[in-house]
Image 1: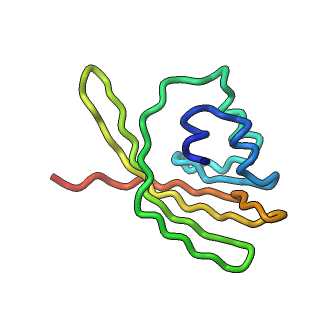
Image 2: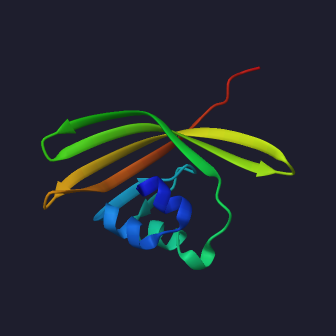
Length: 115
């Protein structure tokens, strides 16, 4: 839901799936709090987004906390050419009143294979 909400600039869903104290490390290495993340996805600033495939998910739970690691593969087209790049995303979720919410995310680029 989080990845889809980012792609669709769906602030309501991003608010629903993140905790008030959510914090993330962006792909650029910046540390963003929830308000900054939500402002980035303001629908008024929406721009074309690449398709995203979520693979290689690993979930580890520890009582009311879970750690999720996934591979995010983005594909975009420009001038009729498809281009893909991938990132690893690490999420920490916590159960609040029976519902899982993300408290943090960390994105790291995956280097393309050497030719």
